[in-house]
Length: 303
Image (cartoon, rainbow, N blue to C red; front, side):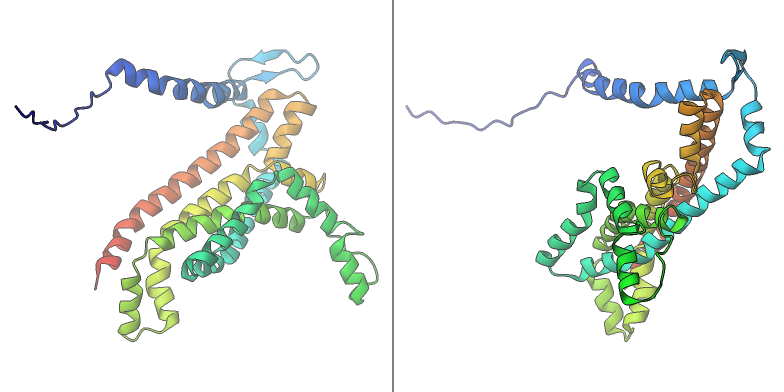
């Protein structure tokens, strides 16, 4: 008598509700511990007022810190300088990153892997180490001034360090990979048939770029600009090391108010204002991306 083995489908039991909660609970606890709880403390202290002589809380709920910030031209100037540095850094990353991402997209797979490794290399090094490298390059006796003096373009060393330009250069070096990878990821979603169809219809390379490639990669551009602007607006290490006491941003002033002046409510208010600004920008760009996506999809579907 021959036995016949019958293959039965293997049924997997779905995890119960308690098992799903047990899987998610550690992540939720970490999220509450490192983000929600500190933000809650910062938000509550932003509405307080303390006496700078005794450091005792005098008002539990007041808008004094926000009125102090928006009523002082010095802090408004810092707000504008922070947004200006973040905007210029984002623009520089876009102008440098898009051509590089476009070249990566058109490169051979082997060359593309090498280029990706080059792009990711700044992220493998500490931001502090990168900025110390720029300190050496931009110093009065650094590499740039040595070349300028050696060629004879100037008789005295150029004042490159502790300027807004030095801060922007350092921020571009640190955040350029985020822009390149965001754009390159968007370019990878473009079907080659779309570009070939545009070329077969007589479109020049310029028209192919502005009428096909650029519109279809707009989502990556928006994502890259969002990441770069939000992270540079709240950057702390680069402005402190390359800007020193001459180029201040909201992040460095908030640190000074909390750690040096011990004015925790005012430092918290500055942090909340910076957080709200980046949040408003994030919401605006996300809405813009969601509005552009149906139009870009319709363009890609056209023959």
